[in-house]
Image (cartoon, rainbow, N blue to C red; front, side):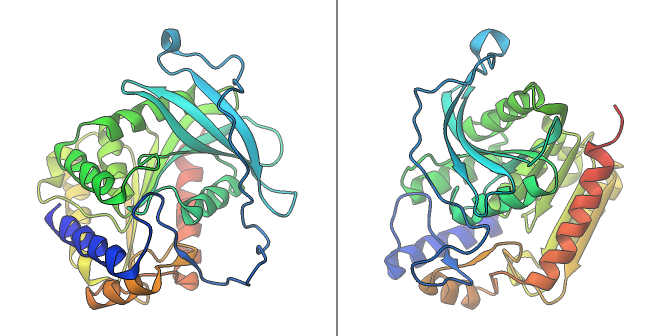
Length: 320
């Protein structure tokens, strides 16, 4: 994970030089922002009241019990419903964002693992997109408003160790989703950048039915780590020099481990090309100097989402 650690170190310096708030989540710039107005589909955030409980949601004697909070709804009125929830992990309660598809369930579940900037509006917009595909989406807040540099470093350490509060929260989130009355019981995981690394770890370690890992770093010893993993789909940007050679390494490891997979690189895209928002200006310039060429690339993103939808459809909607 050395390359990813170096990348995050420089992004941390970029946050400081750009004057970006030090606490999570780190806001990204709206690629199509109109001053003072929300775009159609952009989320309206309401206050969360942790006192409102979600009836009937107590699992394993309370270990995975959850509470729901005031609903956050998308604009326009039709589409996935957004709700803040809390679920229990071995380390205590963990806040999360739940996106429920429009219509009647149950639906397959997808656990979304956010990238290094935390559970910001960009990640919430991606939750909305996955839910609109017909999946019940749970996105844990791994940083929970803490100082970004400390949270990021802790995440990298736990990813390298393969153990800690973040992996435990992924496991607990999988249990929470699979046992929710709105879920069919089949659950996939999707992660972005740092979250993609956790998605790879989760694919082999926990009972997910499919995993989507996007512009994730892959360790040199990936083959034994991926033994027994669920089917994996991965997407990379060809203009992202920080992941050069990574798709090929992942492809080789999955071939050797006998894991069903679909690995693709989009030549015109860079890092974070599935995002809906740009990096803040200072960070964007730094990321460009690092060779990440980060930011949305809609044509590549559309093709990648089509692949993800088909892959998840095959493995999460299949008859049990």
